[in-house]
Image 1 (cartoon, protein in one colour):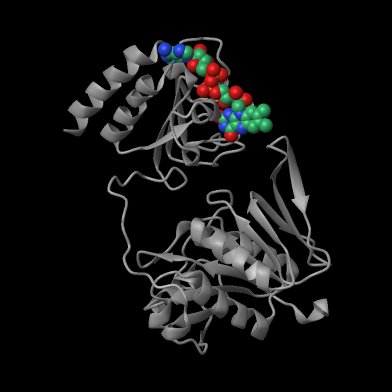
Image 2 (cartoon, protein in one colour):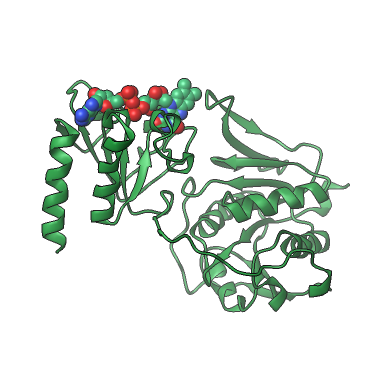
Length: 334
Ligand code: FAD
C-alpha cells in the first residue's frame, strides 16, 4: 500500500427524512479544515434514493466534490448496500481520511467498512486534527472511562477512519455561492442478492427530542431524589418542548436511559438553553454542557459547583421552584 495513492478527506453524508443530518454538515466544517491543511479536496459521499438534489447542499456546507449513489436499492439504510457502495467508491478514488457521524447509522456503516478494508476505525471521536506533512489523522476521544483523552493514530494503513460525535465540531455557515463537482456513481447490486429486507419502519410513538440536537434541554440530577421526583423534569421539559438530560448518577441509578446522559462519558450538548436542576456541577458533567448558550441552574445548596458554571442561578428546592416555572410557562405559552 503506497500512501501517496491516497488523497482527500471524505465525509459520509447521512440522510434522514429527506435531509442531510446535522452532524454530516458539522463534519464538512471539520473536514474543510483538515483538507485545507493537507491542501487536498473535501468530498461528501451521498447514498440514498432521490438524494441527488442534496448534493449541492453538501457543497454549500464546504465540500468540493460529492459522489452520489442514487438508486431505489438505497431507499432505506441497510449495512450491506451502503457498505458496498462506499467500498466501491473508496477503492476507486482512494481517500486519505473518511469521517462518519457517530449516529447509529454512521457507527454501523463505519464498523462494517472497517471490517472489509485493511484499516482501523477510531470510534466516538470528540476532537480532530491532521499532521500537515504526514497526513496522519489525530483523532482524540475520552478513554479509560473518561479519565484521559487519548489521541489515536492509524500509522500503517489508509484510509484513516473515525466516527465523530454530534455537536463537537462546527458546521460552516451555508454558502449557496460555493461551487463544486457532483459525480454520479453506481454499482451492480440486485435486490434479490441483498440479504436484509426492510419490511416496515416503526416510529417511536413518543417523539422525544434527541439531546444532541435539542435547542432546549432540561437536565436533572440526583437532587430530584427518586424516579418519581425525576418525573418533574419530564413534566417541565414537555411544557417547554425541551429534551431531557441527566447526570451520570441518575443514569446509573436507572432513572433514565444512558442516551440522556450529559457529560464526559455521555453526550456533549450545545443547546441554546440548558437547565441544570438538582445537579451538583461535577467537572465530568460540566465538560458536556459548558458551551450551551444560556445555562440556568437550580440547586438548594448555595455552594454547589454548578453555580460557578451558569449564567443564572436559583438557590432553592427544585420541588418548589420547578412547579412554579411549569405554571408560568403553561400560562405564557397558552
Ligand atoms: P450529586 O453530586 O449527588 O448532586 C446532587 C445535587 O442536587 C447537589 O448539588 C444537591 O445540593 C442538589 N439537591 C439535592 N436536593 C435538591 C433539591 N430538592 N432541589 C435542588 N437541588 C437539590 N457525571 C455526569 O453527569 N456525566 C458524565 O458523563 C460523567 N462522567 C464521569 C466520568 C468519570 C471517569 C467519573 C469519575 C465521573 C463521572 N461523572 C459523570 C460523575 C460525576 O463526577 C458526578 O458524580 C455526577 O455528575 C453527580 O451527579 P449529580 O450532580 O446528579 O449528583
